Length: 102
Image (cartoon, rainbow, N blue to C red):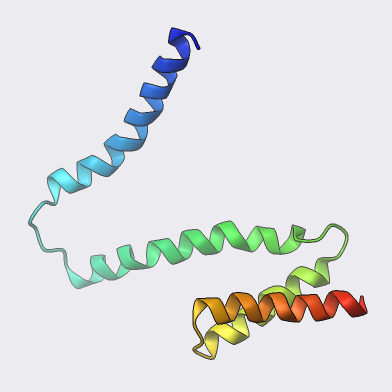
């Protein structure tokens, strides 16, 4: 590994660290308004949805319905108030049964 590799690694580390450090340094000890806190608390869910939703269309090549059944099952189990493991295992179970009859 040459010096170019290490400079690139250092650059990537700085580019990742700086956007995280600046808000911490500026907002240290300050109370944010409830509206801003509400928006910031929902960002992880929005990002997770943006990452997962496109995968629904490509989960099984050539079978669009498989992804839709999985997404609908996960949504229905989650909206019913069950925990994460129940949602995951329930969705896997439904898709396993579906794949038997497919």
